[in-house]
Length: 134
Image 1 (cartoon, rainbow, N blue to C red):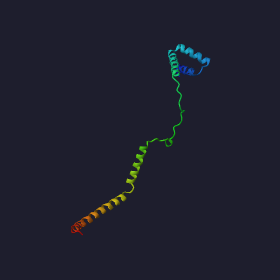
Image 2: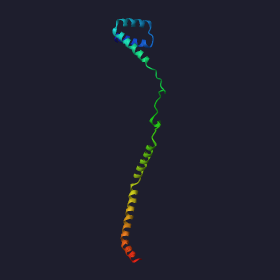
Image 3: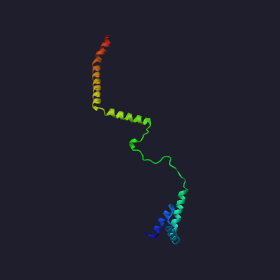
Image 4: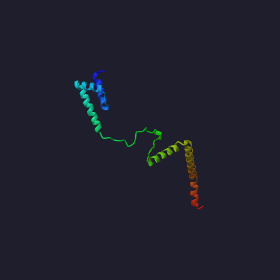
């Protein structure tokens, strides 16, 4: 490991906690001789000062683990819920039983066909009866 790297680690440590007198003496001698480590120490001291000058912001609520998706509350507007229920009901009715709808439709068609035939058959007779006054 490079000698400067060891001293830069010592510089980082001395910003957070005091060094032993032996470590502090070695660091002071090295910083007096090495311009790179002197620049590193000045930058580290300036950075620490900038960080300490930032305003303290406390958190309103402590950090906690997010709840699983199945336990979360869902807020939906009432019209959206009502529209969804109506769509589900309509799709259920459409897919309920196609054969029942076909049977009802065919019964209605046959009823109309029979009524039309009866009307056609009865119409001339009823016109004659009306003309005769019977």
